[in-house]
Structures are given as C-alpha cells and as structure tokens.
Length: 128
Image (cartoon, rainbow, N blue to C red; front, side):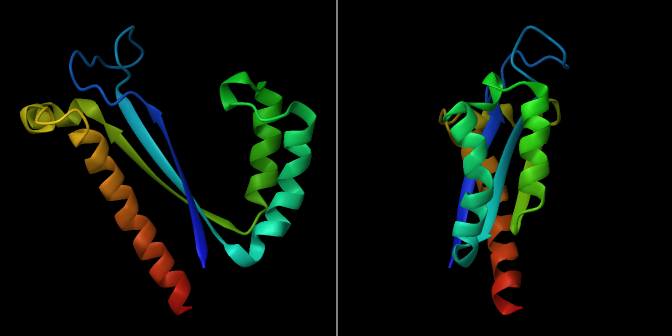
C-alpha cells in the first residue's frame, strides 16, 4: 500500500495575471505529490520527527533558509518519490473562458494532471 501526500503553491486565479515578479496573482501554480510505501512509514517518521520536535509543527514559510535546506537533505535520503506539476498561467489565457465555468475548474485540471502522473508511478512501482 502507498500513501500519497499532495500540496500546492501559488494562486489559481487566472485573471489579471502578469509575468513574475508582479504585485498581482503569481504567474505559476504548482502541485506536488509525495509517494511512499507504507512499509517505510516508521523509518521516514524516525528521520523527520527530530525536525518537528525542534520547531513544532510549522509551515515552510516560517522556516529559515537553513532549516529548509536541512529538511530537504533529510527528505532526499528517504525512500520516497516526488512528482510535480508546474502550470504557467500565461500560457493558458486562451483557456480562460473555459476555466471560469466554475471557480475550481483550473485547480481541478491541474490536480487531474498530477493524479495521472501519480497513478502511472504507483502502477510502475507495483509491477516492479
């Protein structure tokens, strides 16, 4: 059995998007999935729990650059897989009328792309 943890970064707004850096909505929307085999959960937790016990449960925006780099080094050594989708919203402006049909249309489309990649990865891992 595999566990998949998904998080996103950026703003899903497509109106008034300007090239970054800009004061408006960010040009990019990103989603990432971390995949790990449940058999490895205890090993992974044993490695990352010291990070959590030092600072408590905090968001990356509250971590120093050094702490982020240290966390990445520890995570990179773990038996996990990561898959990301980065969407450049400026390339989707022709899609704007479709994306505004519902307020979650664009978010759901990016999620669909990510989940398709996750499904492929798990299928590959399961058949190995």
